[in-house]
Length: 306
Image (cartoon, rainbow, N blue to C red; front, side, top):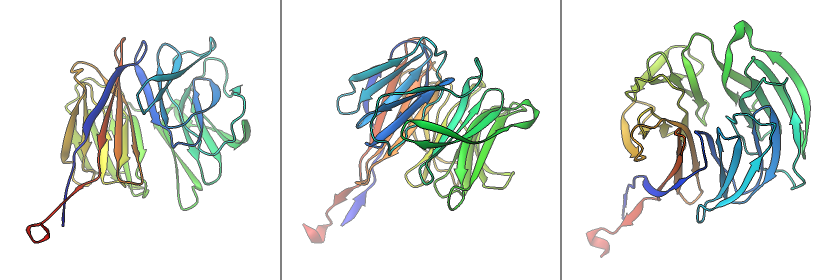
């Protein structure tokens, strides 16, 4: 019995409020944390993903029918650019906290589920590490990125997530970055060339590059998925690229039907039964979210089995 490989197929397209979609993330069907801007908002949800837009709202969508389940908003919020789910909280009332100075917005954050820690970086280059217990953040340490560089991505790595990697925009090169699940590959959106570079981490020399033909030098998110077998990258022309990170070969191009829109927000998710998902948001003033699904390979009977 042989297996037929499947490709990603469109599942849904829907409108998502006003202003560019800056961040997307799928939940893990557990208890979660959602955060953005200089404030932190704790929420609970089930089988959902959330979108953040320039209108200052956080919208929660039910993935069963893609209906809007909830809208989160605070008059204190400005542009919301990043979010993170936490997967183990007992649900309590929501809580907000000021973690940086006024107008020093959050640029990057990452959660360490092994040690229940949250690392957050601000526009000014301040990085704080928190222990998280219920809805309480306790500062473990604080540091500052040297040279006035703006943090773009934070990544925990090492056997027990004992190290924290900060990738910052200093010379105009790094737009976004992702570390593979194995920790062996680092994927970077290179704003200088418009391409995505793959590094054999911790080497500082690119092992390969793949060009998305992006003449406009806007930040584009990237993610590893399918146990690091693919990389998923945004573009400045309405397409999402599925790439083999080992040789840079494009395996599939996902068309959002928004050919002139930026695709800056990307998120991926996988289920234990072999289903894989990609979601992308456009950066127009009337944005859309696109969702694609890749089903497990179908079994094909051979002649002897018929």
